[in-house]
Length: 252
Image (cartoon, rainbow, N blue to C red; front, side):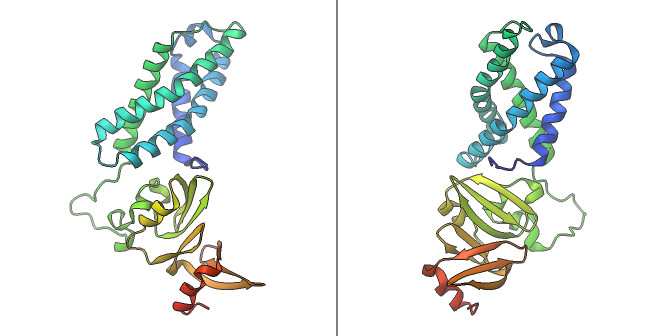
């Protein structure tokens, strides 16, 4: 999942953009395509952009954490356009094969995707960035749940799945992160992910798993294997090399 489960918000934004470009018909599609063909064309093209947009944003925010927001938007937009423009060209080539539209210059595709990405990322940054509580407004969040108190790893995640950290697991080149609010996957090394759990009492219990101790509900034995069961119903294996940590905490 590049999440690999993409955030629901990304698809909502993608569908909204699809509707706008369906009626606007940019890049000559308004004149050359029928109403419903244009809908299928742009909906498919915009939905195909979601993984590219998410991947570029994750990489840029990870590698350039201190870049000013305006410059970060430009970097993300340029990266997205460079990766995604060939996909747009491919869609146009397919349409040209059936006589729907003439292929347009690559520079025009790049410029259009760059401007579109810059607009979307700017709006996203303005609408969904972590804002401080308005003056005089009392927060109903417990201190441990406030955004500023969350570990850096959780702050990388989308707002709707941020919460108390439960566990981290490795899958391919990604880490699957479970919080009390939901789940996400990030393109990140396991060791780097663990290093960003500062402030959370937890430990690596397997070469591919880390768990927060306060999320552990029970310890189960399955034959000779030891498995942690979290309060959220997940099971996490414990390797022999890490069982001492459970003994130290009196869990086994």
